[in-house]
Image 1 (cartoon, rainbow, N blue to C red):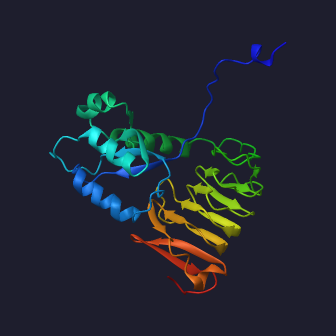
Image 2 (image 1 turned 135 degrees about the horizontal axis):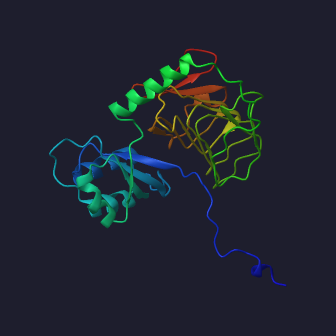
Length: 271
């Protein structure tokens, strides 16, 4: 009998999707176009059709209405695919929905919610401590297109380990934890972590650490040759190649203010 007779027409499963945050400080399309052109430096595949969430929290109060069709078209021009809007006031909701975008609610609790959480925490502090739960045997795995083996350090659910090469076109996302890779990350691959990224091999491709906004995250590699790196959303590309003085020795990448710094792991030298 045909296999198709037993196959469900559709299955719905929980999945994790990585999206770029496009944080708007203005709704002026001309200013946004100029800023994106400067950011990408004319690189046509800078974003590679990444999904994007438009964050409007930084828009000035009383600013002109957002031209959603224009903003969507502008982001698509730079190969960003907007799918949702974050921190939108209720007055924007109908217009956003009319343009096919979802509404993403803010994750920061309101003051009354924060008070409730604090009260609950205080109550727990006076209660007898429950017996500790057994440590998980697997790190939280939240990545997607890569069919790579993962494991966790004993007793530590805050690390994802990849011990097979990350090939071109693959994307690894370590959600809520650090990412450790013991094999090569090839050109065209993308590795992402909410924490730091450690590559005990050669790092090509794109590496994005602190993806949830952690500016303290870093990127480490035994040999650096990335196409693009990012810490907490601040990008740096290497169209002219990675700085030669760091390319053949263990190096690290960190965020200092709004600047991406490159340092040797073993010295204070930087670029």
